[in-house]
Image 1 (cartoon, rainbow, N blue to C red):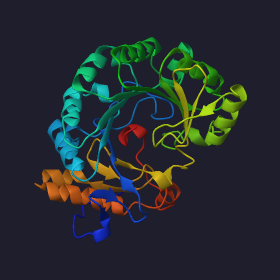
Image 2: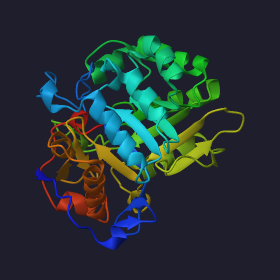
Image 3: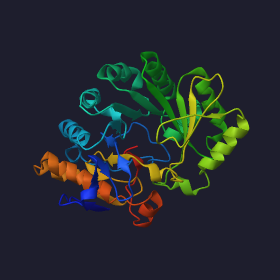
Length: 344
């Protein structure tokens, strides 16, 4: 993995109207921060049974460093923050981190992605902290299959967490389902029916190629266009509606309070409209999920870098973003071993 810490002079165009931008005219306002690497599940498409070798705690960003990064990011056009992991609810100060981000001038939205296991006891604290939205990663509604996919138990806890989030009135509650052929594709209708029962957005996501056993090469890959074809066959009355910038295809069924989305995470149809910046738990900026380049922000922080140097490293990283994820993947072969080390 190539790493960089350059914070030197940038082309004038690298900062467009006060916002982070790249050479292709894209502007970035959405920062995804992994607050940890650890996870309490061992999903088959993410980690081997024994897990992966995580960084020691001293190599991970501290709460103070995360708060500072959010503050600096808000001055260069970041308006939306999403906290991820690992499993972010394992972080003992996650509510405090959320509260600080919500209170940062310029930050308009703060969201979090979780596997939901700890949500029943954490949801109220997150609501009090001001969290705007929760995405729950859930790939099956079948208890036995849940154990097969995650190598753990806990489906009822996840569903309880979803109910807690809805009862507390979070403005946005979404379910992320990684769809795999011959694995959970027979549950498509079960997930769609959640949008009849609840005001949630169910998002069917293409499997991404970040797993230790390369399951994505086994024929289980379920392409977005095939997902959409199957959905429209099952539900001819699907109506296109608006969704978030990452939800390339969004639908609603008549009379259903929720929405259905399909996200082409591997097909990469979204690259031309990308607005994301990623920060790993150990403090590296990634300008693309598929890039082999990383920019060492932790080093800048711990070497006494000022706010300008922090901002400049973000600008440098995003200015050098490649045109799309396919080009980024072609430029290098090395990736971190697991999505839990990148940030979900």
